[in-house]
Image (cartoon, rainbow, N blue to C red; front, side):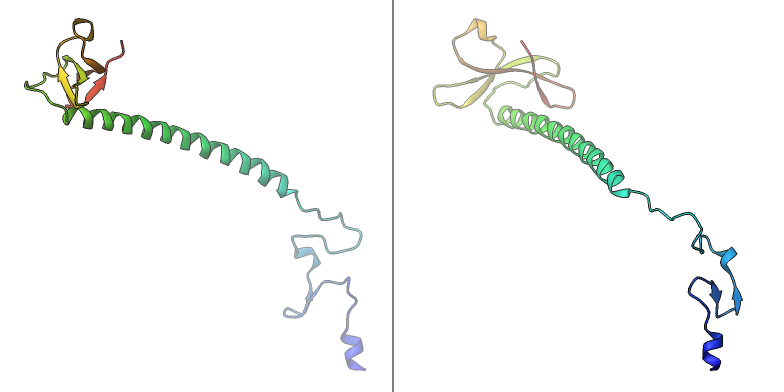
Length: 137
């Protein structure tokens, strides 16, 4: 019979450790007449921000890919020129022309494409870092 008297109704907030009623101390409503607790809709927020993050990551990826492609193109041209035949020491800042001979071997020349009938590839300038840059016509 003692157990029945110690039992409290479900809607009463009683802390058995401190042996006190502590409804006023709770950070949330504890009675039936209190406003309803609604959880925010985080799914929409997550989806919108996931989309934004994906777009940012893709944009950054595209930038890095473009940089990588440009660097690889520069590397391939430099590799081609440094493996080409030439019998002179190129001067920094000067313009040179890359051609292919009858065996399709590349060679570097100071002769402009308009002054010869060689198999023209591209025109380059040697910069201060000893890297070859394509010269646009």
